[in-house]
Image (cartoon, rainbow, N blue to C red; front, top):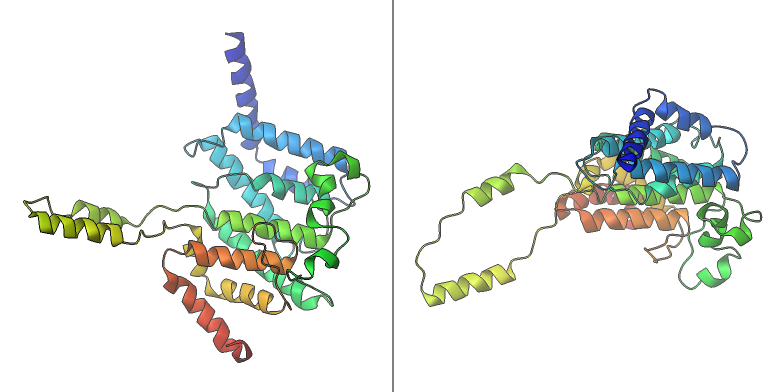
Length: 306
């Protein structure tokens, strides 16, 4: 009985925190301050978010509180990357901003407000496009250059954020690392399933009832069923690809890079992360026509690449 009461008290407190009208603003204030937050603050932020996720039941897609928490965190990220936001203005503690994004990479964003995710992606595309075009040296490492290109790898740079005690005081997070983490989060978002089209349900309902068939016709039917290619499940990538100007802007970002390191599992530069995002869009599109239209529009605007 005492354990049940304790759980109720903890979940009730989580409900109070997430539903507080200043919940989003609290994060924005923390992530808009000056200077690095430091390892202790990053660990406290991580622990707070993990405990909050546990009490809000983020695993169940039907959890209203869990979905509200995830939507609120998306709102925080959107506010950070707006044209006047801290990340765009290069303000705030990079280590704490990275810690928030890294924690969100493990969330399932089904049944959340994906319109916020779309707005975030649009703002991020503009931010990364401006970053790539205005930097004197934005280098995307190729496979052959990777071993000699950097003395500190992406994982080493993130040691202070990801929990390596031996390097906590020696490593710092760069602005490019923050953009990479942001693009990785968007890569996670575009894989979020969306409700299937109603015409698929109607097609299943209008299937003709089973009738008597000969052995030959049954064998032919089985062969056709085996040869039929399963259709990809609709996901957020389909919505993103319909925002053609955003996709074109991402293509321009990629075109501005000299080479791309093709390790899709762990992008190590902004160019790698953009390539990873575009590759996911191509992979997750339920209809390839959705991809071809913005791609052809981009090539028509950049004839030297076609």
